[in-house]
Image 1 (cartoon, rainbow, N blue to C red):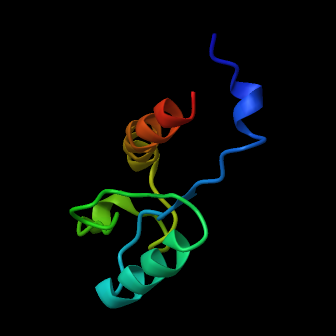
Image 2 (spheres, rainbow, N blue to C red; image 1 turned 90 degrees about the horizontal axis):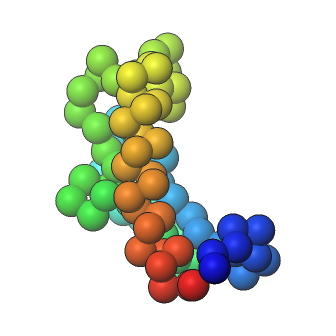
Length: 86
């Protein structure tokens, strides 16, 4: 039986936030984070989004519909990590 409260004691995962930014900076961040913890992100895009309509007042704040999409993507990205730790 899967016990989610036990996961917190031994899984540390880093993730790349959705962003509109400079690809080089995101690649460098991904490289550094991957040195200390498993890193989850969309491999093809590094979670970089080109549709500015997904973002609200800054390139970090998502609009409501984008939050839902981002959350669904995060669930899919976490599944392999959780499955390997069961």
